[in-house]
Amino acid sequence: MRTSGLIHAELLSALVALRHTDTFAVSDSGLPVPAGVRVIDLGISYGFPRFVPVVELILDEVTLEAAWGSADVAAANPEATELLTNRLDAELIDHEEFKRRIGQCRFVVRTGEATPYANVLLRAGVPWLR
Image (cartoon, rainbow, N blue to C red; front, side, top):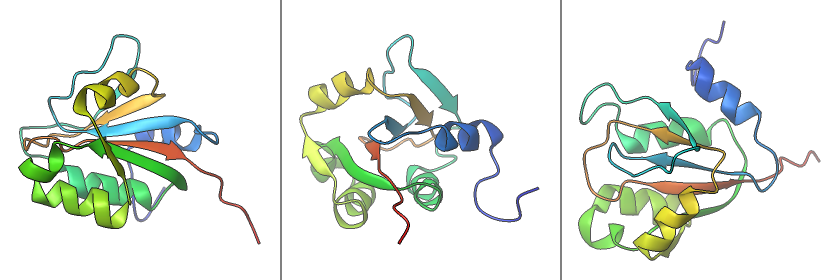
């Protein structure tokens, strides 16, 4: 039994199955996800769990090589903007393009976040050993 970090079995299983260049997303409660894309639903109620803490837990579990967010986040959501730009160095792209890319994800982690544009698309990297 794990003693720290993520304890959600379905989410951990999905993260462990990622391979180099696979993409996945962490979303707010309302991001449209195309049919056929697996959704790991963590949402319990609007506002819980929040987007930023879920992303922070995931970052402790995976190696990433790229991240993208919606350009609309900058004007609408300072907390998500901080995470995307400062912690993830995410490229901010057109929101319609962002939603289109969700269709290529291995899975989407849905949070209960209820603030606008709290979404991130992530590409798995390789944890090279040295």
